[in-house]
Structure formats: structure tokens, C-alpha cells
Length: 233
Length: 89
Image 1 (cartoon, rainbow over the protein chains, first blue to last red):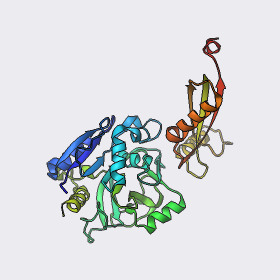
Image 2 (cartoon, chains in turn orange, brown):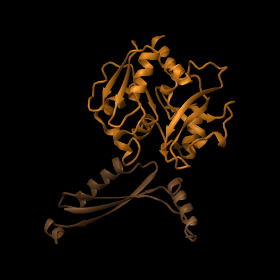
Image 3 (tube, rainbow over the protein chains, first blue to last red):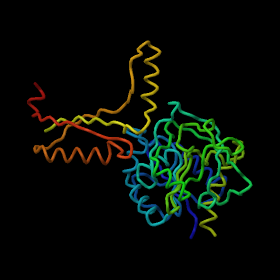
Image 4 (cartoon, rainbow over the protein chains, first blue to last red):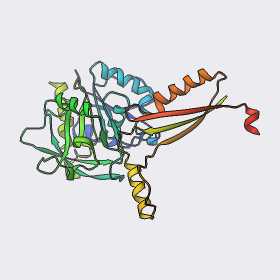
């Protein structure tokens, strides 16, 4: 399969160009924008739902974007095994669309948090994390959100653990997962999860902001490289 | 025509960080006897149907598919009938 990222542009997306820049200029991958009113995924092999404030976060984050014409195609694509990654607001949209389980609520601090965080890598056997070598306990990637407090009931949390669906958890620099390193109150410090089939992934931190060395951190590249190498090999 | 008032509440089992923060504010103001503050949403709209049952179905659809997220929220609503002349008065 040829590698092509399709970055969806919703009204209010604001990390779409960052994602495009990281994928094309830093990683040199084929990438195109997909307009929310269109339904054609123009032969993308990976769909990326970017961060931002689609539809102004009105009603609930991601609630209205979920009904955009392009999302019907994305849901179809995902249900057929297509690879989808949602970042920040993109993660919230995947939750509203039912492609990933659980919900996102307000940060427990009620504050918008924008800073670098460390993520412990809980599962390296996914399409999205396979290039993170086992000697690397944590990846450093920034967050920027007001509603990143992941909530699921106990049964779902147990399922997520049992199926190894938790990919990233907020941790300290050494990879120790504790309350102090939880920036938003997420249950079990959850920062990123995959669906049961392993083809749909959502994460609150922004890997596209951790690709260009000029920005001082490049761990985000590992996530995009994981996806690309999975498709290319 | 019906006027619908929908009340959306976060499920009791789910933490409401907003409610907790607002209640802290109340304590700072010296309003100290408040407990269990929960913040929800009130949504109003008109339903352009004559039959009450059909209107109820329309509102339920709207509530369950878009206005609330059933994983974390419950909804309740009231419908009151009116005619355009009534409303003007």
C-alpha cells in the first residue's frame, strides 16, 4: 500500500497545518488536506484528525464535527480497518463518533494546560508505537487542552487494560505513573488509547508539535514513523 | 407548535469539576451551606409539529443523538403547546 496521510480540516481546526508541516517538511511523507464538507478521502492510507476547537467546542468537544460529511467516510474507513489517528480535539471527535470508548471531561483543575509532558509507553505493539524502542521509557510531547480528563467506567477501564488498549499514560521523567504527573485528572493517567482492532488511535498530547528539532523535542516523529513503517513494510 | 425545554445533567457517578470549583467559590463568598453543586445545560427550542407524540419522538431523537452524550449525561424535557398568536400575546 502506498503511504498518504489525509489531514481533515474542520471549521476551527488549528493544528491541521502543524500536522501537514511535520508530515511533509520534516518527515517527507505524502500528505493532503481533506475538507470537512467533502466525502472523498482521496486515497489516503492514514486519516489524521487534528487538534483545535472544531465548531467552537460548542455543546461538547467534538460533538458537532462528528456529524460532518467527511466523518461518515472516516467512520466507514475505520470500520473497514483503515488507520485513523486523532490528536487532542481529534481524539475528542473519535470518542464522540464512538470509534474509541469513553468520554472527555473538563480538566480537574478547570484550567487550560499547555506544557511538555512525559508519557510512559504502555504498549509498543501497536501500529502507532512500534518504532519506540524499549530502552526509551518515556516520550516527551506537549499537551494543550482544557478538556482532556479521560473518563470511563470501571468495567471499561478493566477492558482497556486487559486488551492492552492503553498506549500512553502521563508519567514523570523516569516513567513513573503517579498523581503528580497527571495534568488533567484522567483516570489511570490515560493519555492515549487504541480501539480493540488496533487501527484507531487517539491521544491528547500533540506529536506534530514534537517533530521539528527547532522546537527542542522530536519524540513525536516516532509516532508518525511507526504508522509509516507499518504501511510501507 | 411546541416549546421544548431540555435539561441535560451529568450522570451522578461522573465527577463535575465545574460544580466543585463553583462551590469552592461560594465558600470564599461566605455562602457555606451549599452542597453537591452540579452544573448542567438548559436548551430551549420550538418543535414545528402538531401531534404531541410525534414532537416527543423528535425531541428524544435530538437529545439522544446530539444534545447529550449518553455515556456521561442524562436528559429530561418538557413540551408546552402554543400557537403563534399565543406567543405574540
